[in-house]
Image (cartoon, rainbow, N blue to C red; front, side, top):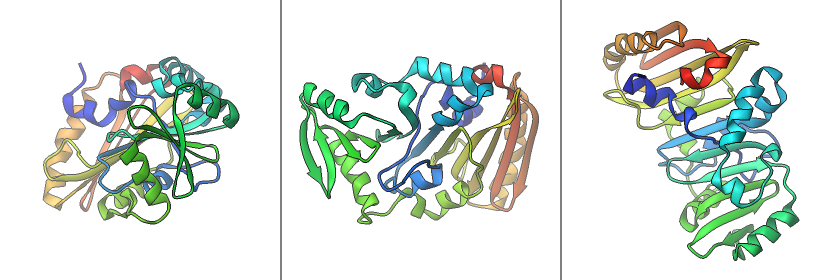
Length: 266
């Protein structure tokens, strides 16, 4: 069974299917772009790049697993999963989806679901019976409750600070590589840890790599956690080439695993 702390760091992608972009981005996106548009105070941000998985033959099995899991929102809105490029979600309940959508069909579906069309700060805004909201900005959708979606739009319009404005969050994000999955959390499972993040990247045609960073309040806290994290990662059967190093207040870690073992490894 996976160690509890390791599970907290890398287990989220085994059970969650999410990816993202927000209103002012043209095409493409990154966890940095999304954090700049996510309200400050969000506990966790998870990003997945479905388009890269779909286009890379070595990653197609991962994409098929993601597609099989799907999301209830995509199903309910009758969006074709193959048309989704990326999605992001926060633990606060905001979900953002970008893709090549037929907006007429989407609006017809929202109307059939008894959503009422409105507008907020110039953004198209559909409200359901229980205050669930779908905002449409170009080929991006922002989903959540009324308060959550409006808070996202405020960030996009420059009326509210973003997750990326937090120095500790920014420091961690800027140390992460671009990956098919990226996670950032302000609740790391280590004492006096401030923020952690990690990305999953393709190493070669057979291998994936996890690269992560944890920022601590003090250098001594890093040293205390270093040996524990290294031991825990080495205990994972599917992981190899484990490396854990300290750099000031940062604990940086990496490990590899076979692509075919991606779910078991996580």
